[in-house]
Amino acid sequence: MPDALAVENVTVFYGTETARIAAVNNVSLAFQPGTLSVIMGPSGSGKTTLLSVLGLLLRPDSGRVLLNGIEAGELSEDERTRLRRDHVGFVFQAFRLMHALSTLENVLLARDIRGPRTAEDSERAEALLAELGLGSKLYVNPKDLSGGEKQRVAIARALFPNPGVLLADEPTASLDSQAGAQIRELLGKLTRERRMTTVVVSHDPRWTECADCVVFLEDGRVVKERTTAK
Ligand SMILES: Nc1ncnc2c1ncn2[C@@H]1O[C@H](COP(=O)(O)OP(=O)(O)O)[C@@H](O)[C@H]1O
Ligand SMILES: [Mg+2]
Image (tube, rainbow, N blue to C red):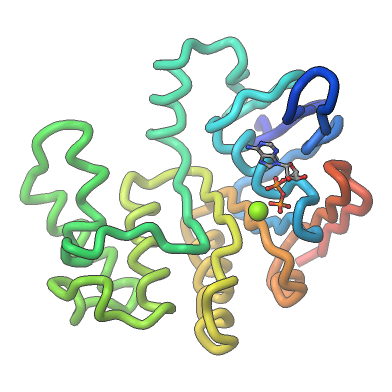
């Protein structure tokens, strides 16, 4: 079975020819289904840039990105967008919810891009929100939710298309310690139950306790890698 997600010798430069930095510098990593990996490193170490490459949002200057064995660099922009839309879910630090819409509508919003929604879509979104403990908050606007609840809505939205890959950029950085612990536990559980390939970027060492694999970045390079036998 191929790795669900892999980068090989990936480098990303920012800046101009005369003053450019390698935000990601010759990084090779592979991620497997059913595992939660954490990419750790100080601010500016290239975590968000690497996650953008893994999520096919950013084309690297060199190196290969493989999603389900498909080399993303060989696809057209449209094909990349489709591959990303069908297989990758994203979760962010700032939740990125639509505050004027209910939690249910937030989960269904991305669905509408693909065409008219069905009754089954609404039922599935309701069930997903219920599974994440938000069954009584379907018609509440996210602005009236706690931080932990907002992040659970964002996770429900990301999971709705049943992505094989879930990418999260600092998903607990805006949360208090209790809500953060809940989100860590939830993402670990969902990863195992759904056999997703989950990659979390964080500078919070508490993530290392629930991760199957920890990667440490510094100045765009992998300086340490640890796999926990579970
Ligand atoms: N759009 C950009 N243009 C220029 N430099 C950038 C851009 N995004 C990030 N950088 C630089 O690339 C490096 C890595 O940034 P980033 O991937 O955001 O790191 P992290 O997420 O670990 O904080 C930093 O030096 C940052 O200043
Ligand atoms: Mg970042």
